[in-house]
Length: 211
Length: 103
Image 1 (cartoon, each protein chain N blue to C red):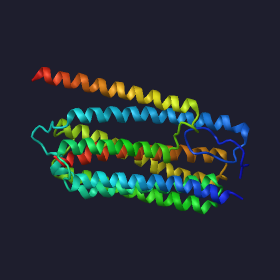
Image 2: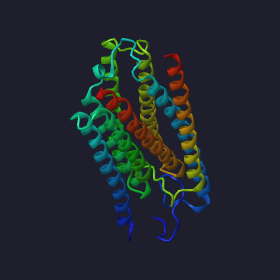
Image 3: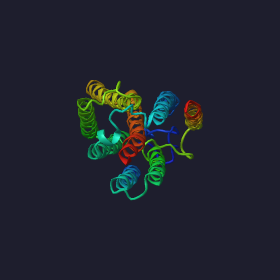
Image 4: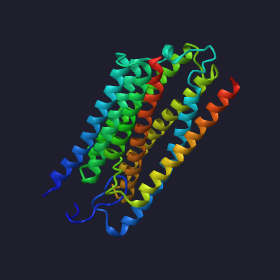
């Protein structure tokens, strides 16, 4: 591990200890680039939220959120995603302190399972809604709902595929600096999706269930 | 040497983030599930709780802080926040204004 007095890597992400000083600038610019992507993604989500907010109440005589949303499934989906964010913290800590590969695999495996179960629950919700006739073309409200929530679900699915790719990368390569930076990027992405979900369960599910 | 204490400090950061997130989420769900407040104050309350939770996530999981983050990263985040506020606010003003004119 690195010396005690060594300054921490100063980017708004995971601090990687043991990165040679010469490579720090490269690592910082890599992570900065990923932040730029995340912020552009945040802009997309923010505007989808804005459209959703203007569409609240535009049911066109179709199904209302009170009829379609299930309290318990919103609750369990939230629990799954929150816990998966915490277990990804295990991956970050294991990487940072140079733990054995099996710890990284263990924590990433748990995160993957939680994320996969989240996607499964969300798909189940959507099929139930379709079955009730709550399809995107039914009303302006439902269009904006499906674009917003399915966009998040699509991002989570991409995150899951990315985890599989990281598993393959770990199996083929040593855990070198490039692989570590990829893990940092994946971590930022996964925690960012959790923040988006906090907004979704508040503005979409809890607000919808209130009515 | 202090590898152990360093691991513990990191675990504490994530543990604190997770505990706070669970508590804040729990309060939001309890307010809505048991109808503790009238709809309008309840929505304001859960919005505030969500805002606090987003801050907790940024601080504990994404490690954004005023002290340790690189300046460019913070500038980027704050610039994006301003753009988001302008664009979302603009959307609201235009669409709700249109709505009142169409009534």
